Length: 360
Picture (spheres, rainbow, N blue to C red):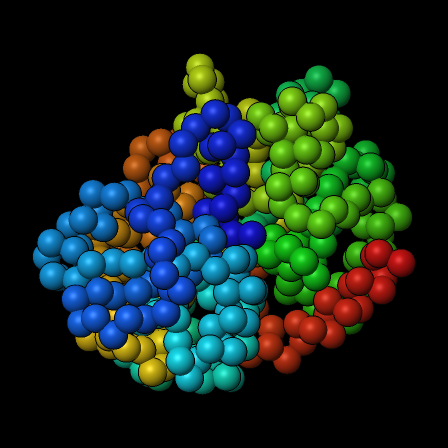
């Protein structure tokens, strides 16, 4: 589950309406070949303001159809299986943890988007091949329940090392790295921090310190975590959870009444950066419409619309963040990262080793 879905689930848990641009198509979702329709295939976390999509449709002359296709891993796998007869024109939502799977299977055709020079080079991981275009980024980090740590007169952890200390025993809940995007991101963060040899020793310490593993983010954040609105209702008893650096703003923006400060904080020394990309699908029925849509996704209007819909950061340097977002989301200055090629070479074995080590 990506950050967008997390924000949506939290919003629903707080009694709010889901934000989305448009629903999935009523037919089988495959590109119709209609030159006036451009089909966006995505994971089920796509969200955008209706007026922003309407502005694109008016200026471009294309009508946008959105096909949501499960979580990111499922959506990528299905797109690969249907690449000869793709479901749409553009795929959005493949991230740096899954990128090699898409590229190695020839999912995308090259396209250098207009305005790409506005995007920081560190996000343009495909070099001069331009098979994918970066659209947003978010940081997977441990969140903490401020009230718990205040009541127990305990300083919240701020690093991976801190989480193995005795004072934090039985406090952390994380997601299964084999079934959850943030769970995988947290594992990759430890691999980036401790290296190929050291990450397993770290997880042994974390396991000995009582880390709890659940299947996915919704259970971890909205049931086990004591600091979230959902967790409070469910009487969650874990004051530390693997989530996102942008989770605290959601707790404020969607609360009624709104608190003056976020009830949750972020351990910024535990973060792993997740980057999401869009690409023009090979054999797209409407490649010209697809190109126009990709240009739009990195345009300033869409980039500035994302933070309060998807709760992610724009990659365009000229996009401004809304005040509500910057007020409650901490800046992560030094997130852990890994080269997509290294992730590709090690991901499956890391997950297999992690599963054997932590779950057995």
